[in-house]
Length: 110
Image (cartoon, rainbow, N blue to C red):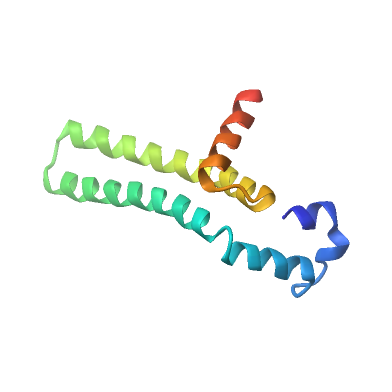
């Protein structure tokens, strides 16, 4: 992304060195961060689906309804947060937790 933005002439074709370098970094150095961020969202989605299936079996349960709503909210926040964290991972090569801290700093400064 950074090369495409700052040096668009280097990223003109699908097989340019900039694109190939980005693919190489994404599948080697940054793969753990990508997997970790995706795992967090997947865990929340799994919990949400479990609560949803229990809620369908037990009608009129307010606690399960609130829990499902809360998990859905956490999932949406996680997906939004992942977008910003993955940008930091891709642009600067940070690990996921450091990228998350940098994204939070960005949110606080704005």
